Length: 174
Image 1 (cartoon, helix red, strand yellow):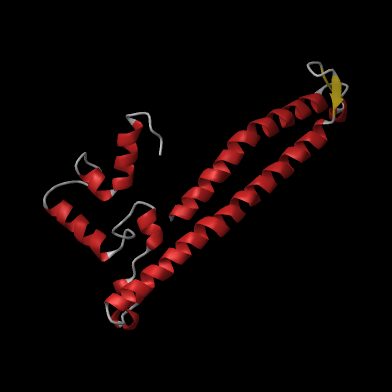
Image 2 (tube, rainbow, N blue to C red):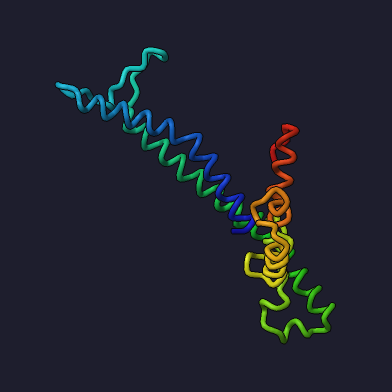
């Protein structure tokens, strides 16, 4: 999962955390109103706090539309801003690697010389889990008896998580 996917998921989670409780509360009230004997009309819900009648069915529809619109806005923003930036940086990196290797990297299979900018920005400077450097690192750690989840191995395997935990101790959320 890349940095853009993380940003997308965080944005969608924020939308869901804001709107889902409102939607769930209104749906529960509607269900209770309809379950009464005789049933009450949820389109004529009286709100004593604001001293007015509210159409709860339309309110839920509006909230669901707002949730869909905001989710689409998050997706559009990530697609245009984040992915565009990563793609631009990836193009520059590919061009640089090609130039530094005098074009040899263009002849090799992509996985042998590819530097994934998305993985670097996502806190994985050595690439994805199957990259040669990560396989070598894991082999060395296992050879000297350091587990990937140990206090010493954790920061080596996932430096981003270690930095986030360190900053969190000082009240800084990254």
